[in-house]
Image 1 (cartoon, rainbow, N blue to C red):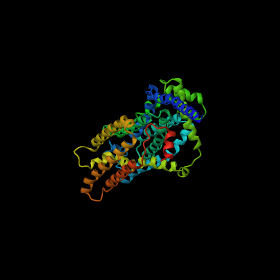
Image 2: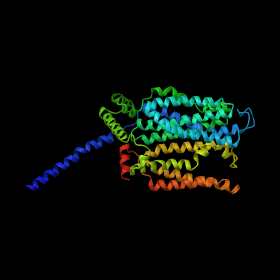
Image 3: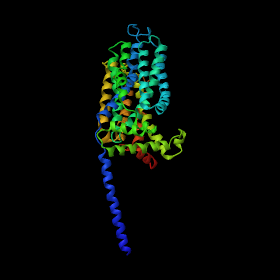
Image 4: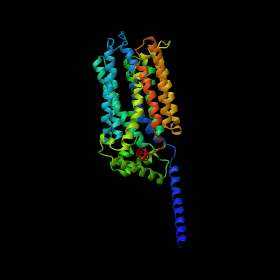
Length: 416
């Protein structure tokens, strides 16, 4: 009798396994190609990052013009001093940090779409003010405002992109978004030496024009809409973004967004300090900050902002502007390749290649400069050292999150 009961339980257990199999197939079947409307939405919103990339590289051609004694080139009528150059680079950076803390909160209050549209207009106005400035203090004011407003775009666009994408295409569109920064920089390097200061500055905002025209037709973030308990509107947005899916698949996507939102609401009210109270919070902060710290400590922002003036002193037969264009082309090509292979290779290997390559190239760049004037360019080796340290830390500490949902990443951090 006991033997028969045991056999009955064994049969029941096998049936339970078989019932779960179709569910696994359904989840894998839901990975479908991206729709035209999703591409339209993503491409429209990342146009702001092209303008942002141009604003980052704006100072490279602009400093060459502003240090000129020729009043037909320099709108200020006099060469700017070294202190003024430092101010022009430093103060906007500080305000950018402030903006990155403020604008994501604005996105939570009035919505991602409305916030981005307002900030896009403010960026456009700031560029116009900078283009027609004839005094250093006025120019500094508008460039600072531009950096402040771009930090809003820099903070909200990744949130918006994550919330309209799916788990399997989030990394690809994230790389395409990041590609817009070097595209904007290459655009600024290319036109900087051709046009006057006013025309060049105005043209850096060219990508904002199609954004301001097309973005009203893009949807609001489905996550934000669902957070306001507008369930039907959220489902309709998902239906437009993923129109190639059937009703059951759309319901699964809606359920997944609801679970992610529920997880977010559970953590609502947690301040920054409370992130360090739990193991997964501490690990999440550490792993999230690691690639960002490597990016800035390797000196890339300094090189991008002053590419032409720095390369003018390299002793090359080419001008600094020409070399800057070459660097911009190479950067765009590398970003483009990474966006194509990130889903197959993963984020961690690409971060390792990037950090190691930056360490070697920056260290080699520091050698001839130090050979010519020992002690004046030791910062190059410091940048290379930080890149190498970053590569080692990424190799030993960074997990692979490719294709994982927010819930899965939370579990990964909990069991790290």
